[in-house]
Length: 301
Ligand SMILES: [Zn+2]
Image (tube, rainbow, N blue to C red; front, side, top):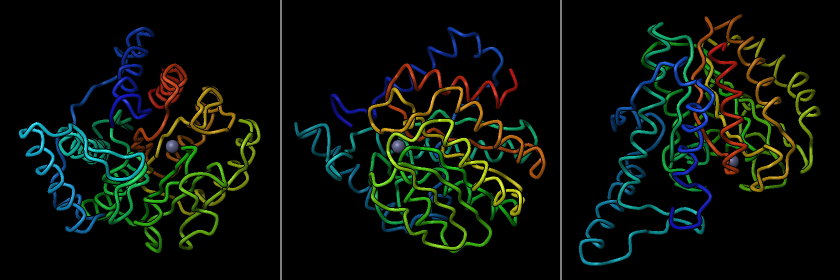
């Protein structure tokens, strides 16, 4: 994204370091993400959007060779560089590969430590550090490839998952439940775009215990009624109280708790199948600790 940008490579380094320091890495099975097939990305994005990003990528490379700038700005806070296109393909590819591994029963659940994130990418627009909507692509892929009837998307990023809503709204095979700070970027979500959207906007300074109560009262009955066959998680950790990106009061204990609730639903209805994908989370230490808490519950260690 460019120097000084919060969506930086150090985010994944912080997670990696934390896994090493805690010894958690030896308890986990590691998969490399293959690039997604364009045909799979087309399940969630029209060809014009995909072509535009690929065209921008080629254009940027030509500029670079001619001595031009290393970044090309898409919106005030989203840029691409010469590696964005392959990274975005792998980010979506990770969600798809995780879906395959979980559906094949190789593993019960998966966490995709990916950049760029995805949940702000709408059908035809890259925005908010996102290019392809990794979770929405994988959800559409799971419905088609495995002929599932019901997939759920759980989004606990501090920002509303407007892109995922845009792609999945109105599809009765998908249920999306989300909790996010409001009013706040991207200034959407107050009025759900479809009956399959359960949006819970909460004001700034809502604390973790209050969020737990809201999740129990709102998400849980909907998820239990829906009985998902597979659960995707848009795992953003920017609602952490140490994360200046937002003003919510989550802690790593709250992330462990919310992961347990998701896991309970998965155990009851979806053979434990969960595919979780990293979204936001910009305070490096809090991000790493929160991912650790999330993974300890997912991996049961
Ligand atoms: Zn976010």
